[in-house]
Image 1 (cartoon, rainbow, N blue to C red):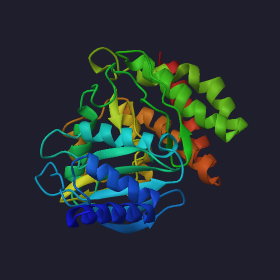
Image 2: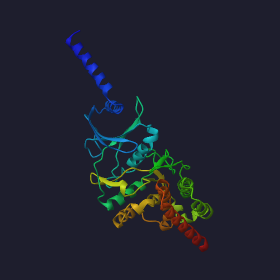
Image 3: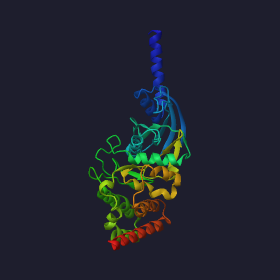
Image 4: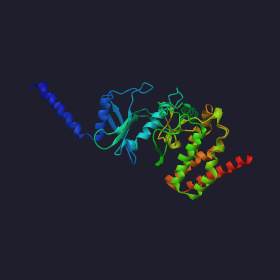
Length: 347
């Protein structure tokens, strides 16, 4: 055997030995980078972990460019559990927010998802997305405008909603609570939204909470009369599906490269007002609302519907953490009953 043959054999042997020494995640990343045309993994730096996943910042030798023309680094989450269980909802949610935030310079900065799936060999899964240099909140006026732009973005096939319905392609979670997202009928409007929120948001959380007072109040005095809260939203103001972050509080708001950014979503298509059910811990002040309402003015019945959307998140917090959140949920339901009684009396 000549020198070239011996060198080639030695190189193959070395590569085989290196591959054998790699972890399943390392092997998966190398395989993905090569097949995507990004060369090899240059650096993989640990970036923390949670109770269910580990994080890395990864660079490659032949990086793609971001939307603003800069080389992309990647943020990788990995888990020992399946991609369907761990990353499918997050991937589809981020992809939808990315598509609905391609509305010009004043839009949200959402990381692009490059890959997600199970390991080709061995047990585990990963999601690979654009790495953002996240910082704290900056310009709330810009955040308000950017949120409005996402809510105004049309429901499309690219965003995961070709039928213009309420729901989402997959069920996901809000915190650790399962969040069902079955699709309503195509070209849905106000009535379909009322039914969706009644059954798959408040009704679902009440079933989990098991609080008889709240359940009886909802079933006997509120659910059948919900339509009275939406009488201003028909005809030209018919509710259309907006993409929602779904869990927007101060811990999920920041900035990246000087632009507002939101993350860790519980995404679905719904009424844009439902986004503000967590504003009691989001710190959304006058500057934010000036930006948002410059594009989406508040509808007449906004304050009447606010306790309904707040109640969903108070019930979810009770299901997650227990304690006094059930008292807040009861207060919102009692408020709704009073508003509905007054509306019926006024007829």
